Length: 184
Image (cartoon, rainbow, N blue to C red):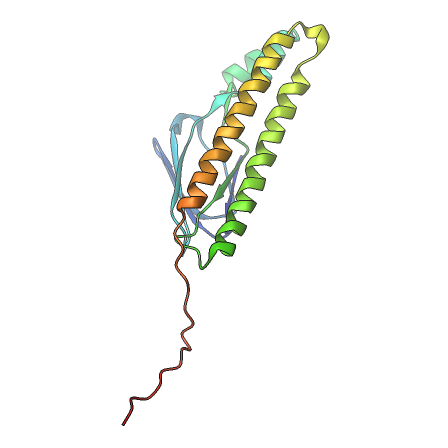
């Protein structure tokens, strides 16, 4: 099952792939058929830009673990049942507002998005480092993996900052503006 969460919640999402199409309101949870890949995910909410991404299954590392641990029966079952690939368990989409009322609103939205990115990369780095140990003989590969992940995190944060600076600011004026009567 794949869970799709949007910020703001309540976005209307369409998932479409080969012989597969569904339209649901986020947050949502659905089973994505492997043979429908790649699946286009598109989510829209009023006042926000439509977010479009492609979901592709990736190799399920449980199969490799079964092989490495000598669990050949488990590996065979995974391969026969098509469990050698999996979609992400959770997809979080931050729909960007079309415009921001002021600099404070813009910076607040981007600060929250930055927190999400930093949290995501913290998990990635923790996963890489937890797979590494001095006795595994993988320390060189691990250091390389950590370095690449840190570089990718910094690049993503730089792109976010560039988008923040270019974000559209459109002040929202009150509809209760007083209109003075014409001079007589």
